[in-house]
Length: 263
Image (cartoon, rainbow, N blue to C red):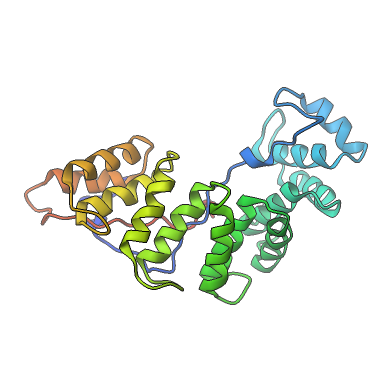
């Protein structure tokens, strides 16, 4: 993720197309039923070799993240592919992430979109969010804001905080929808309420500049502080601007982070 930048850089605005893609999270990849959080690597491996799709996905995640075993992206994608071929939505989503990362497989946005689509159609919220971002950024698919919004809304309805943030961003920049700061504020607020740092930073910016809500520097500082405490560099810089340095010029600009997967 980004490091804190000098104040002069805080005011730079990235192009509107650089939408957030949700952070790599395996919380939605944890197999249910036969596997618990405490299931050992040896047990997961044994079940995976017996053809258990949930275990295959979990084993892939363990190799991908280095949990209980050394990181091995080729092994990770091998097991994701095994589980994905059985229709496991979590593995399909994780395989999409691997293709975006270019880890264990060559980077390939078309393949990423393909696997996200399969998982998204099964209701996987992370895949729905990531597929929305592919459409928003035109990566592996033709750019289509309406499709992006469609998939973000699907994920947001399941409570996905990153999708909620992205919907807010689209209203903020009139991407596929009419410009509407009140709607942007609404969705940023939903994202921030779940502790999403970029949602919190966006709330700070909305209050700081009076977009979609009455200007309130106290609330701006509150939300910037929450995001800054999570290491959000934009919020940290905007806090400095808000509290005023002699050459800050006043005001602040919320700079959206570039696409999450740290790729």
